[in-house]
Length: 149
Image (cartoon, rainbow, N blue to C red; front, side, top):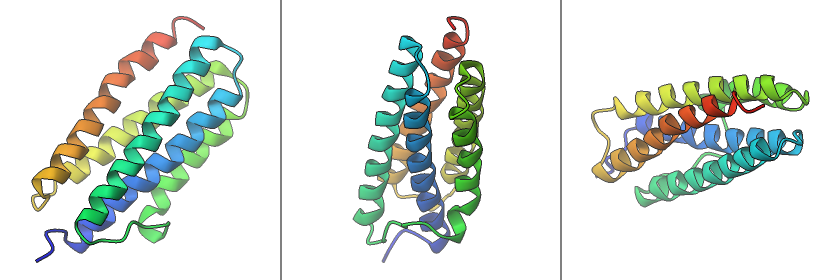
């Protein structure tokens, strides 16, 4: 029996989309700053979110589900990162950092929502929890970067 309910599959796919959108947003931010520390940070975050997406995709497939290529369940997460992309392309470091912080806080909330699912298999819970903790810890790094611009 598949341990994933339709709702769990949907929430995991929403996280997957969020990671892909965050990766694109961070890449855009890295392209639009000449500040070396910020460029390095944004590039590292883009790579991290790329890895997170692939880990989630593998986990979803392990339980016989098909990772989404997009859809209605992921619409609101996708829209949230569109705002970030607009600001990331404005070439304003302060706005970029503020939006990165906002985006990461929203990500943590979405991860927590998935972790509230009582039916999560242990491997999925461990993966989601690990990714959420990394994002949470990184929020302190972003806040530290605000002081160096």
